[in-house]
Image 1 (cartoon, rainbow, N blue to C red):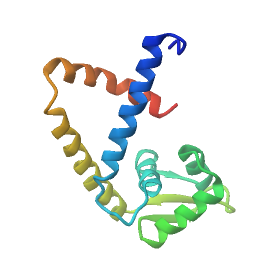
Image 2 (image 1 turned 90 degrees about the horizontal axis):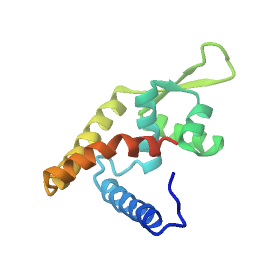
Image 3 (image 1 turned 60 degrees about the vertical axis):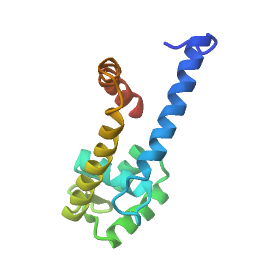
Length: 145
């Protein structure tokens, strides 16, 4: 557990925050479809991982309010990237699923961003690359807390 009152831990947290924010900004510029917001792309990515979800479930996973998610889903549906289907057990709800068009766009986007990161990683030496590989699962865990 980091002790943020200690100089090394505080410096490490500050460095991590700064690096993640810079990389995030640079990755956002590696978009395939400029018409989609980062939040819309994130919703499609979440649907890619979970397959299908209600708008309420998506709102919780994306840390947005349900009315905001309702608007996001409507925009994505209008663009042909998601489908709304009746909920199998609760007819008052809808289930959101991604379309093949969304999956193809996500694959292209992932490939572009992965290529960008791979180009950056070419500048690392073997030891730095090994440390980054070891840190990847920890960063993934932080991203989902």
